[in-house]
Image (tube, rainbow, N blue to C red; front, top):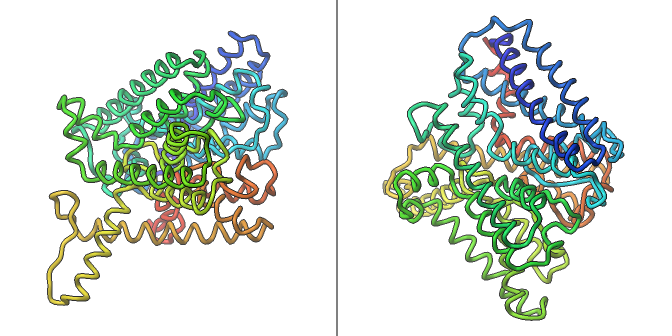
Length: 483
């Protein structure tokens, strides 16, 4: 284990993150909201911490291995989440306990979107902007940004990228050099953010709200500058724009890259995961629309379709934006939407959940086992499109599913032990492990009223979901620590 090399990189990354505390300070200056001092103080402290971690290890430039990358990734997200706590805890306009500040910071950075804050409209613009920016930075993964910059400092990137990029095939790269891959990911990410902000502005949002909501939309995060979320704007046009960009953000960014470089939309139609994702979304929207229509949930058909489409896509892609209280919808719809968040978006997207490709492979592996029961001597393969997948990939998907289920059960039982009721514990676990945000029961609106012990447990669930379980679990194995 190259601990000093890991600390060197970690120190540099903390220094890099400290710079992101300056834009909210600038927003405070522009709006004169008095919130700049918290960000200035947090910037100075985090810069000093980063320097103190980096300086004693500045000469340790040994190339990191895969094992080092796992440890650095977990340390990075944990440390950054704690650094991100400072402005929220320091702000006098936001009287949060330390636990609540930690919950809000990790919820933003992991793009979960669960919140403990009430009365968002009364907060300074700088704090609102900071929450949205946290989600935007966490959306693609700050480490992906780091591997585009740190190679210039003599630090290799592949081992970090492997542990950060979601999906079962972590060795897949869009370009030969990992730094180029990360840069192309961020070009696409920034372009989508800009397009989303302009679309929101043209639909009637002010520039501040448009930029802020574009951050959380492209990150598939769900934070808003209003307690009523997207429902504050009461606009079917804004709802539709949000749906379009959520779908784009929940699609594999490598497919976006292929479509852009190849100048053809056929890349989307040829990809089996994208086809499955869009099919799932269309089916879910139809089911939700039919249910709310039959039960006269809305006054007219157009409104019913717009609300059904928005809520179905928002929850299933793990964004968690709201225009209405979906928890009060009839029959099975609230539970259906929560279960849909387990599927989430495509691999290598900003969405959470198991990922569509894993669900597809689980289904096809299940079909293969049924065929083997009927024809024990038959030879069956698992395909993704026209590709026959190695057995190692199939085994990894099943292993991931088993680990995901185990973490879910442990977290849910822990929440029940803190005194939460069944529905609240189940939905809160699903919402945080899937990086969704809103749940049912006591956490339908926010997480302010649940016990502190439950909040800490859910912070751990957020990290498990963001780092796709294995990245953290591997640190708990004795094999990992053996030299």
